[in-house]
Image (cartoon, rainbow, N blue to C red; front, top):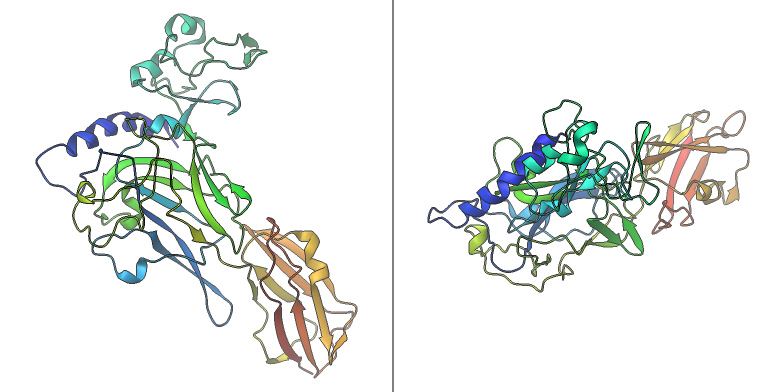
Length: 400
């Protein structure tokens, strides 16, 4: 992330708001009246096929988009729990100051070396706090100053300690008068799934202050907005109902909190967002929820009832999320004719946000030309404590 997008955001707020007030109709016309409403949410839906394999699709889990196939617009009860990205589209511009913060030269408070930009600050205010350290205090002050030390013991900039209340300076290595980096504020948006709080990945999540309901050739539905693009910091709990919560300072230009109208943008609204007649109570986003996919295991070694399986080869299983590793070994059993088979070993490793399980046969391999049943019990859980909905079983017959 570079400072350029944050700088552009200052201009976009006024440009898009102006476009919404002209007599020229455009798909970029927004709805600045009333509360800021969630019109659409795009997310990744996980569809499990008959073989237990997961296929992912991007769909509108909330709201509609004119011209989009109806199969891509529906409530979601099996959202992907890894590799997820949620695009939350609004009917007007939000105060970006509550969503993104800029990089400072040292840790200044709870968010480390990042600081919020005060409402009303301009690129000139950022530049005044990006000057050299020896003239910083005389340049960076007032209500719009940024990167101010908020630590009781002071902030360490190099070998020097900056007192609480004084500027530490904007990180501006290339000396262009703007912050070198900015990031999404970790506490601005939270995904609440059951009793679990899922925070955004501050490096990947971002605020997209552009309004356009016509997907361009480049980017498609991933370029509509204005939108918050939320990447979970880690996985999401399986088999759980989720909804968003927003910090109290995440508001529009009038200071009104976000809400979600029933159903989001309706199919009846075929015009611009400023023509969508909807309403909701500020702060109430309960109209949008989705459910995540259940904990699922894919057998990468054989299908159920396969014959002629190599009796000395390891069996490989892959979960659709990270597992609580303390629950793996005890959940796995292999039986032959109803009798437990001893001697096999179980190991696991994490890869791309998922846990793979490797089952090594007993010394010398499984008995030849014999039918076995591999079972994974519901005591297997993900890292959020969510278990398998039902036991996973595979029957296989070894070769010679």
